[in-house]
Image (cartoon, rainbow, N blue to C red; front, top):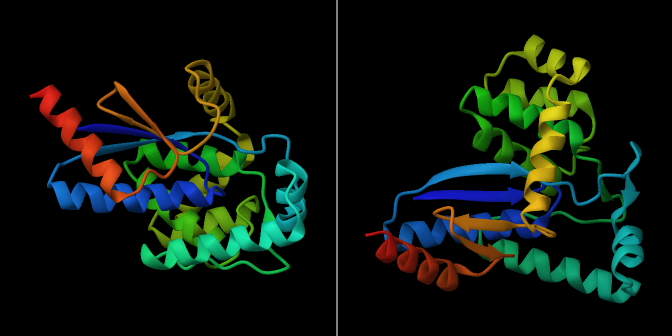
Length: 210
């Protein structure tokens, strides 16, 4: 089954949703071909980023207490899915345009999922700045990808137009938030649905396809 996932690497619900989907695929025994697609939660985020607590309070109108409670909830949910979320007063939201460009390059090498997972780990557990080109290059190299080519991809921005076009394509199809999971190019599931709901949807799509 082809599964398209529109997501951003600084979206906690994207990694949560992906892990839930993984468990659902294992539980149902359905084989899937995952295709990641770019989405920027904050395309206008400056290079220096923004403190996560301030960002959540400003963007969603949350209080400091609500923001803290949300992070605590994420930590608890993540623990059940083997995701080690790390949040503290230094946590920042980051610009991810370069990250999406590097992932597009990795996709041409069949390694996009590997880099996607490495960047989730870098941002949420290692608390690294995924807008920093050296961080991105280091993560690519850790996967055995070519350092010089990764550096060149970011320096010459050769995939900038392609990534922008892909982002606009999914927005034009009505995607306003992530994760957006499309099963079999027909059925859209928005958000982290939970293992049971993902399992039920997978079974339904498989039965209709058959």
